[in-house]
Image (cartoon, rainbow, N blue to C red):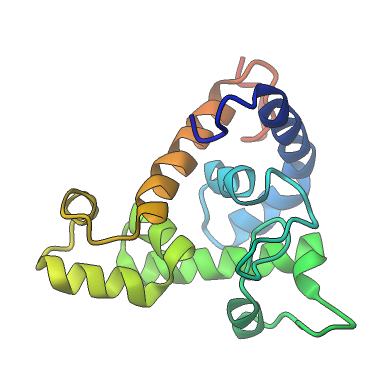
Length: 173
């Protein structure tokens, strides 16, 4: 549903992410990121290293310039480390790790990855609860974020169960 019926585009994106997996797993693992969260790459960029959003996010992990700089990447007109697969993966992995440490929940970390830490923190404060489910039910997160988190979780399940998938470092068939 997230791909809007574009099965050929989805299949190409899965092939790209599968090809990148072996290069990215060791980095994710080193930061305590579950390997299945490589699905973020599928949702964010479709595995395209040069993907760019209308808001200025760039690369596999669609890092915003401020976030990239915060995690040590160079973002200038003549050099942008968000286009470097390894450097951007290190930055994204540390960012996801920090978000998980802050919120204590992978779904909240994914929501913050999409909409920013402040948005999620303010939503928790407004809800009076630390439960991600209540944020969605109360519509306290942006629509894009309410759709993003389930999309990443669905992409993870999709990648986990594809015949011949190497996303988790093994054949999931």
